Image (cartoon, rainbow, N blue to C red; front, side, top):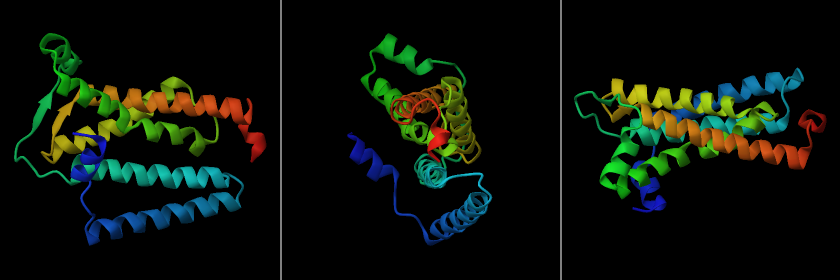
Length: 184
């Protein structure tokens, strides 16, 4: 299965209710950003980055939680790195592909994060933010019976977010210098 198939399979069209919820929250968020912009607390780059992060998080939640049908029972795997043990022990190509896709899932989120804060973020902040977002996803999957709750996904998603933050931090350093705030 290629990335396009994964994207189209797990991203069905949003319902009217979902679209209404998304745009309602987006408008409130935009109004908050306008207020902060007028007070000199954020710049235009931060506003765009914040709105992109919100939209991406909604798409990720939709594809990983809300489009899935309820299994009717809770599933979980609490062993850390069980997926890599499967790769090593059984040479599972499907599992390595799933692990890499989980890393890729929050990589774009990590790329945008430093722009939302308008500064370089340390690697551990990217990791923590990625793990926190992934914890929300995994917890919703467990509570709503819509997937396997597992620590491996949290680690992989956090790692992907961290890699995105590191790359964006490098871009900040090379294109904006050591103090990006002077380019407000």
